[in-house]
Amino acid sequence: MTTVLESLQRGLHDCLAESPDVRVLGEDILDPYGGAFKVTRGLSTEFPDRVFTTPVSEAGIVGLSVGMALRGLRPVVEIMFGDFVLLAADQLINHAAKLHWMTGDQVRVPLVVRTPMGGGRGYGPTHSQSLEKHLMGAPGLRTVAVTAIGEPGALLRTAALADDDPILFIEHKLLYAAPLQTPGSGAEFEIRPFPGGYPAYLVRVAGAPEPVLTLVSYGYPAEQARQALQTLAIQHEVFADLVVYTQLSPFDPEPLLCSVRQTRHLLTIEEGTRSLGWGAEVLASAMEAPGSSFRAGRVASLDLPIPAARTLETAVLPSVESIVSAALALLR
Figure (cartoon, helix red, strand yellow):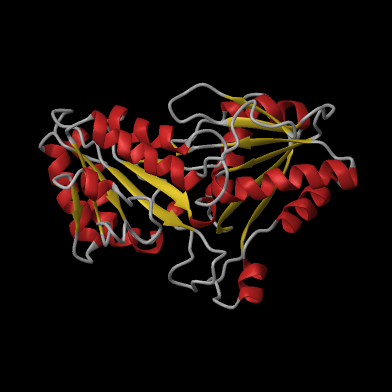
């Protein structure tokens, strides 16, 4: 069965094979090492003149790539750990995201910045964070998150080959080994995609009656939410929809509203810290929609640094158990 890692590897390979304008840059991505999480393994051997290892300077890597994009190339950058993407915030927010407006749309910046986010591996406070919420509000910068549902490699191909805007492309570390779940691939869940280059997905336990609760998530927490769907159904006879997003910003509430207008209960799930997070924006967007009326809750990491000790890390991060508990509390 294909994993998320294998799908991303194939997606990057296809991007390089299909377009001579694609370049891949990052720290320690050349073979035989092939990058910290091995997504780029094999690329430098097959495309030695278009895969570049770089100094340890996130601002420099992204700044160089913005210049490459302005000259007509399509760079795909790997930031080794998402914790360091904020070192390139100036290049992303003040340059890549704004240049087509500042020039009267005379230029575009087709740049993809890939980076692994998230905890669960005991890497400690500076290598385990989910910091994407700090960049989601930048106009002109699209944020896309890989999920095990659908085809991550296809998302990457869309971002690198078909999108002329800069993209922050989030890959949760715990998803790399996860097997893909595609519509029609299994008997446990019904998966329905919403159309689009960065689709959302509606997930239900197969054969479940009408839902009374809507869960919404992305990335690895969406996998935890998918497990929570089963626990809620089997142990508590509570049936829910799960809406999984791949495009986090700009945010389109319509896929979510299709469910929450029926269930009138909405629970957001993310791994970023709870305060001022993606979940708050989701709830606000849904509440502002005409005719909306629902009860709401949020599951997220505690507003604390992420510990290295496994027991403490588990206490800070969301879990299947915390999702189930929050769902039952919301319904009560």
